[in-house]
Length: 158
Image 1 (cartoon, rainbow, N blue to C red):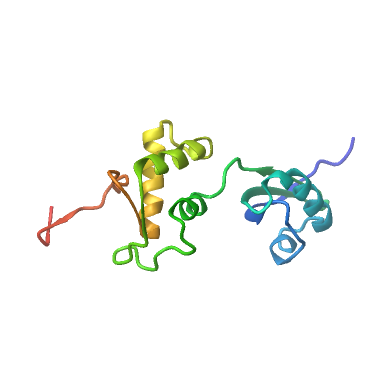
Image 2 (cartoon, rainbow, N blue to C red):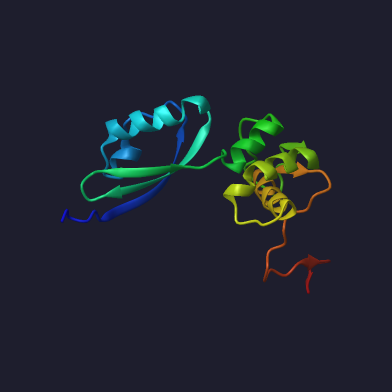
């Protein structure tokens, strides 16, 4: 009976589709980098230039398997829709862009399979939270409230 492969590491990384190269990010995982980049670039050539989220499972014999997520990270999608290069440095004071609810809903629908949200409304609120952290305002949408955090009203805790 052949020896059983043991998982040595599971890594989640973001690479540019169709343009992966061997480097420190892959070296630390402990896989055959040349083989991985060849397979990854072949699988993602239609997504050339997009940021692709990948989960790599490395085994003790330097073999691997990898899984590619369907959509780009929410932050990248929000930057594209808002037409900005960088997010705001301080979410409380920097408002770098405003997008519509329809634009945010489009992102939420694209991300629905990759999130733990069951409805489009829940996914929309997740996107709104990411947008708020980036300094992007979504018209007519409030992000999901944080559980266990008290609101300040007139400088008094309630």
